[in-house]
Length: 96
Figure (cartoon, helix red, strand yellow):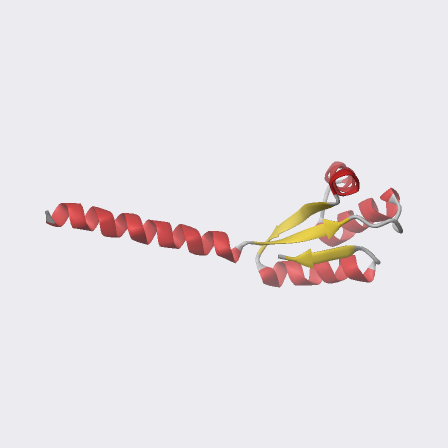
């Protein structure tokens, strides 16, 4: 019986650690607007989020057709200055 209990405790601990890891990941969501050009959005994603030109182009198309797109995931401390760069460039974005 003791072995079974240890297995359950380990399983619960593993699930809690996984849940904490998932919670620590935040994302920058970029929203569509009718102001910025594709070129501006692409250039800004390259500069602010370290996207390749292909990534930035794909994200700009997703934003255009779906209204929003997650453009970067990670720790909040890493995302905050990146999101600030997007906002300073006139894009609509937030960390969620």
